Image 1 (cartoon, rainbow, N blue to C red):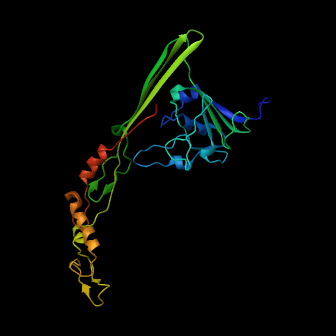
Image 2 (image 1 turned 180 degrees about the vertical axis):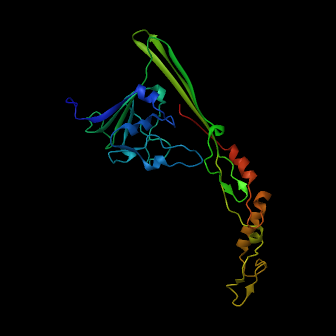
Length: 285
C-alpha cells in the first residue's frame, strides 16, 4: 500500500517489455497486465488488407480508449481525432527495445497529469550509458511457416490457395556517452515491411445466366400472359432494361477462368496476381 500518494496504477519494467512475447511488437499491448484494463473491440478486429490492430486502444475502468493520456518522457503523445481513427492512439509508438519502463495510472491522478478521465500511460525511453551498447533485431512472419488449418478449404473443384502473409519488423538501437558521467545519447530505428495475399472467394454468374437463360419458366411482369420457357433467353424481350443488358456485358470481360459452366467454380488468376502485388509498408520511426 502506498501512503504517500492516492494514485492507483502499475509500473511495467524494461524486463517485461523485452521478455514477454508481443505478436505485433506494440509495447502498449502490455496494458493488458494492468488491473481494470481490456483491449477495445475496435482494436481486436482488423481487415485482410493490413492485418494491423489499432495500437494502444484499451478501455481502462470502463472508459473509451480515446480518453487515455499517452505521454512520452513527459511530453504529450496523443493522436487527436474526432473519431479516433487510425492505427494508433499515439503519435509515436516506441519499439519495446527502446523503452526503459512505463507507468500506468488508472485513477486518482495527481494534478500534474490532467486532460483525461481514463488512464495515463507515461513512457520513459531508454538512455545511453558510460559504455557503448547496440542491438540489432528482426522479427519474421512468413507464409511458408504459416499453417493453413486442419480443414483445407475448397471452392467447387478448386482448392483455395494459402493466403500470403510475409512480415518483417527490423531495427536497431545504439547508445553511449558524449561526456562521461554527464551527457549521453541513445538512437533507435524500427522498420515495418509487409506483403499480403488475401484469399478471396467471389460468386459470378454462369454462362447461362449471362446469356439470360434461366432454369425455370419466367413470366414477363410487363406483359401479362407472356412466358419465357426454361432454356430460352429472356434478353430478346423488349421489356429488358438496357442497363441490365449493359451490366451483363461487363461479365464478358472477365478472364476465362471466371466464365464457367453451370455449377462449376473458377479461379481468377488475374486477380490473384494483382493481389500478390499489393504491398503495405509503414515505417514506425
